[in-house]
Image (cartoon, rainbow, N blue to C red; front, side, top):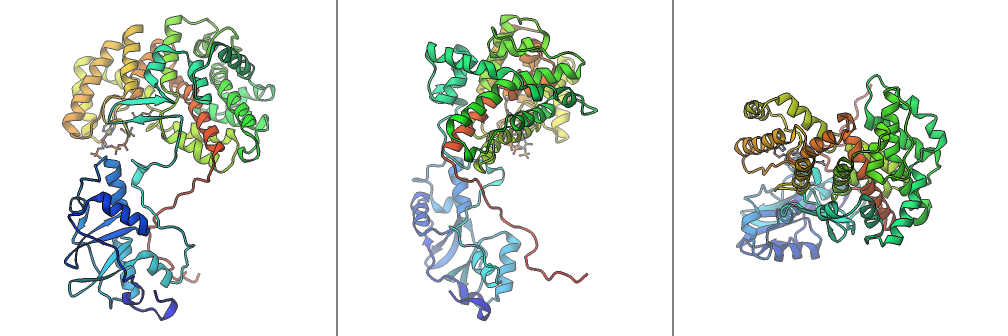
Length: 514
Ligand code: ACO
């Protein structure tokens, strides 16, 4: 490849040794050739005439679609008749053609025959902007859908099968058969506890339920700082304070044992912080944790000071178990990204709470219940939903990035809602069916069903939790998953630092004089 200022045309810097494929080859064959040659694209030729191109971006799409690559043919996935460039085209012109269309590679063609390939990287180099050498960049789809970014032993979601698991167990079965403390232990240690292990675990974390004194004194200020009380924002602030006051060290500087202590403390204290802040905002004194009650019953207890009805406590516990972990969702990924920088565990949990606060992630269950209120009666359901979808609105509590079938958490919580009863259950079932039918008609092929948040609202409402505590309650259990992921990330860390494809006007433009 030629170098520096002497280069004028594409022929000076194109790669002549270009990797090619034929339309009848399989994707698997071509993908392994691209991998071994470490190239980002392959030109598809028919008798040395370029008829298509396949890029890494296509490979990611193919992998995400679940296609059997040993059968799928190149001709089915290639971009046909790719734009090409002639060898005598000037470098600037070629650069503009690539950036204008967002291409990273372009075949170089003369008289219909393939001569070589020119890449954006080559052109950028000529513009004398020397990017640091790194292995060929892979382009991920928007929203990182279908991209695998790490290995985890904590759990996984199988969207097509409507199944998810914690470690080696079906998560729904755990929610049906075990306590939250059992599942918490499982997430941290990889196995369900023996009786002795569970006893020790409960004793160890009991002390951490108490809010540290220095933070306790500041909670009234946090609870009443805003004109409009948002419990999750208050929680985020208080969690940050606990980590700061307890002198949490960067995860990079401490051993696994100390980090695990931090994890146990933050996770144990979060329910107490939620309820203390809520009560303080209402002008009531916080209620100390009840040492005799398990996690979920104690959670409800700290709201009212009454030992809750066991049916309601079990319903909330099942909701909390079912939301402990769920693959690389936005908040879990956030916690892992922050941990990957070596930051302290408090920073990672605060960031995760921030990600959870968005309506597209954790902020939906109260909105789902608001929707039931807005619809009011069964006969309003169909026109209300139709009107909302036709106006481009999203129906809260429906749709999921990974599940393209019914969300197993929704199915389980529907059962819990039926068991504990309440005035909303039959109405909610009617709305669910209406939304599914209307979305199938107006958004065909998108496979939109109720997600965890739809029946979560109904269950929490019946258990006596106020609506503005729904998302904090989600945080109270998801923090177990976040901290398990933080511990896993820290144990085998590498900084998570992807790249972006710059799509603005081509630099460097001359900076205008003032
Ligand atoms: N209501 C109406 N249309 C929807 C809905 C919905 N709830 N969800 C998806 N769609 C439509 C979109 O409009 C889009 O249609 P289009 O192809 O005509 O543009 C199509 O389905 C695909 O939607 P995307 O936004 O690409 O799907 P994505 O995977 O990015 O989003 C999400 C998933 C954010 C959960 C989405 O379904 C949604 O906004 N749901 C409502 C909010 C909600 O319930 N959030 C809680 C999620 S569960 C959790 O985090 C614990």
